[in-house]
Length: 133
Image 1: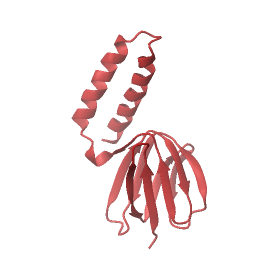
Image 2: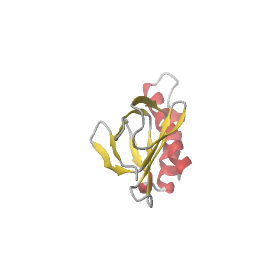
Image 3: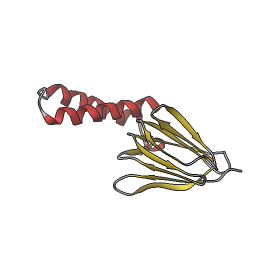
Image 4: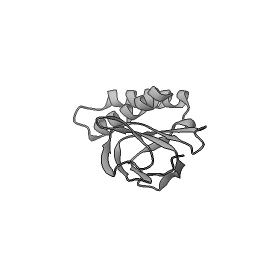
């Protein structure tokens, strides 16, 4: 059985840390499946879903990441992301409500308002979350 140490780290804290048999990452060129003894690599991540399969291969955890980087060696997968959400804790209605509020706020900003760009990123983030719910 394959054993990987998987860590997901955000600027605030270590978001997740456990052993896994398999991890799927949203690489820039496509999804990457990682097993034990994977060649060492550092890669950029696109916004997407990280899938972590438990050691007994009975459970699967899914996380949304806004992007970031992953460092992989034969035994470890370390994911660095500025924003990560455990998808099992997301509620579709809450995300839809947040998205609606953001879209209303976005429509009210002038084209040169600096809040407009940040709100646009948050809209894309919530759309990504909805795509997985």
